[in-house]
Image 1 (tube, rainbow, N blue to C red):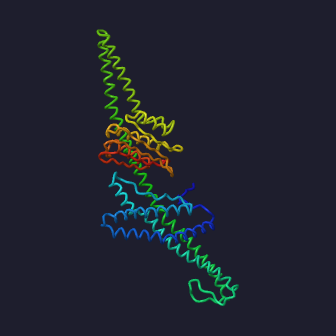
Image 2: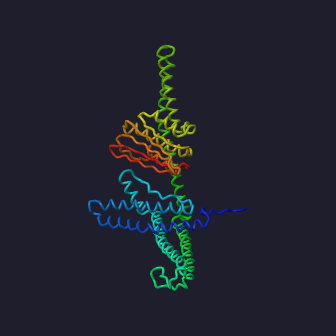
Amino acid sequence: MTTQTATPPQATGPKPPLRLFLSILHLAGIGVIGGFIFATLSGLLGTGLGLLFAAGIGVVLLVGLVYALFGVGWFEVARVSALYKTPIAPLRWRPRDRPGFVGWLRALGHQAIDGRMWRALANFAITAVLGWVVLRLAYGLVWSIVISFAPLTGTDAVMGPFGGGGIDTAWAPVIGILGIAACLAGMIGLALLHRVLSLSIVIRSRETELTERVRTSTAQREGAVRAADVERTRIERDLHDGVQPRLVSVGMTLGLAQQKIDNDPDAAKELIAEAHTSTKAAITELRQLARGIHASVLDDRGLDAALSALAGRSHIPVSLDVRMDGRCSREAEAAVYFSIAESLTNAAKHSRASEARVTVRLRDGGVLWARVEDNGMGGAQVQPGGGLDGIANRILAAGGTFRLESPVGGPTSLEVNVPCAS
């Protein structure tokens, strides 16, 4: 019996010579722009701290600094991933855990201390230093090539690479060849060092990645359990408060009709007709309840058709804008569908909204994004066991994120992001 051990994914891409050349070009490019970028970031930090109490100007600059740091970190992660053809998850802004301004402020603070962003910034700084050295070596390489042909110029001596003393023309070709070899070796060595450092700093360690996967899996499992519990409670409530009383009423009406069928046939007919009407209403409620558990049109025709049918049954007018190229997994589409369905139900029942707008997009990276807005009274909050709690748990179980903004007075907006392959 053979056993296999998991190993980290190996970087694949261009052949070694081309990869080294691209690494050297990256180092040279970052060496040129790195100083300007860090000077700008330092200027934002210094000015922001200096104007911290000047009518809030410093606060705005410090907030802009966090966004600028995130932008540099995002660029560095994308650069390393593209250069070495290594699958690295892109740097993402920390999601809000609360609605409104407080949620944004907390997300901003979490992003400012995000370890992955700072690792990417540290790698960018190291790359800038290495790039500066590569630029000096490139200058030395050009100088070495030039002095290799110094005897052809007929001069007695040539100037050193950095303005030093003259070099005898007779020794210039030897020094030039040695300089060419040294500069090329230095640039190649720095390129190899850059690869080792970048993949070590930017990519998470295997232990950290496994720990994060376990944490994510645990959160998804807990969300799935809570979502199932909320759904079971909703089904029990709908059966107890809706269908069950109606069926009891049908039974009582038929009992009265049975008593009157001999003495008062006309009254018995009226009672039977009433029971028939109540039975059809109960069947309709059962169909709606079954549709709330599983939307067959979602499997047959996709999310667009299912949402069109949902908007057609809504008690308030719904503006629907769905743009998807292809299908997502059944779990992802179901999570988004039921989130939108619950949001529209809340808008009709609780927020006193007169209209709603639903927007769905299939974004780059295989993420299914949806937003539901209504013009209601706002003030919606996630209550344990409530509909919004069910949405949050269902989205969490699908590996997505959930954001609610509902200030008092409205409007209310709900956004969900779910990986297509969830």
